Length: 213
Image 1 (cartoon, helix red, strand yellow):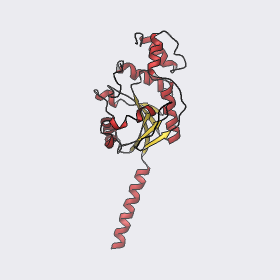
Image 2 (image 1 turned 90 degrees about the vertical axis):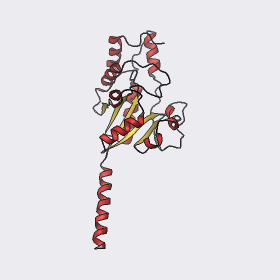
Image 3 (image 1 turned 30 degrees about the vertical axis):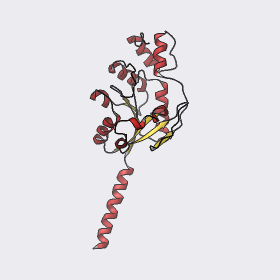
């Protein structure tokens, strides 16, 4: 009797282990995407490749709590630009959880909803090295760490030293920022090669960022 019980317990442990191994691995890249640029695409591609992820979800924020007073254009424009930026890459997808929820986009709330909705997925949340030092101030960060694996990518002049468990991914240092792009548009300077062509066309068609600064 004891031997049979032991066998059953061992089988249950093995089944649970197999189920954990079968979890789909999905990355999440959040941000305002105001606008999305080639730096975002490079980060997503490098993380997906180096960690062997199934896909990367691009997660536009509704009202990001860490934006430090930055202005953000209407969500409809940012959604359309992300769609145009990623349309050629089948392993990149748009995730509208934060836009649909509205209000402040706390990562804890988003990941709680996504993990409950998709229990078969193991999420890898991508942040830049510039955000690592802010992690202690994130809303319910200790609980968030139980839901996702944080992935930090390098940025010049920023350290990824932290007591939090992170996976560090070395990506090419491409000095492109959304704020610089917005200012270039306002100054009527070229933004060629900084964004996908279809995003540039959309910005020009809608007259976005003309009054930046």
